[in-house]
Amino acid sequence: MKSILGSLLLLLSVLNCGQENMELLYVAQTRGFFLKIVVKSKVLTVISERDGEVKERELSELDFEELKTLLAITDLDDVKTSTSSKSTYDAAAMASLNLSIKGKSYQFDFDHGNPPKKLEALVNKIITLSEIVE
Image 1 (cartoon, rainbow, N blue to C red):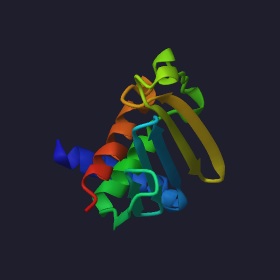
Image 2: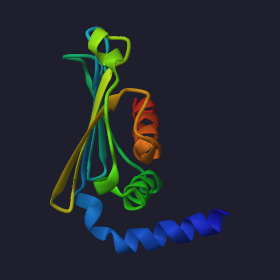
Image 3: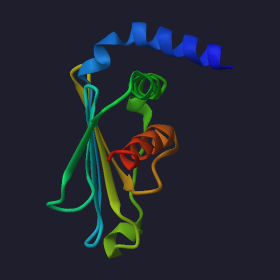
Image 4: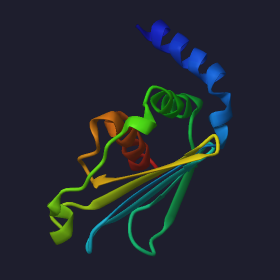
C-alpha cells in the first residue's frame, strides 16, 4: 500500500511540478476565535489569535506532496459551498479557503469544522499541519 501511495505521489509531483508556487489561505473566525493558516510554496504560517504571534515552519517534502496530491485529485471548479445560519450567531466559526494555483484563484466559504465533502481531506490536512507548528 505504501509503495502505491509513494508511486502516486511521485507521479502527481511530476505532473504538477508547477504547484510549488501555489498559495493557500485558510481563515476561520468568530468574535472569540481566530485561526489563519497560510501555505505559500513550502512554508506554513499560522496565526492562532488576532494580532497574535506568527508561527512558521517549512513543510516536509511528504507533507507538501500530500497537499499537492489532494489539490490534484479535487475538482475545484465543481465544489459547491455554503455557510449555515450558525455563523451568523457565532455557533460556528465562518471559514474561508482561498487558493491560488497556476494563475487561477478560488474562494470557498463554509462553516469551520464542516467543509464541503470535496474539500474535506484538504482542509483537514491544512488544519492538522497547523497544529504541529511550534
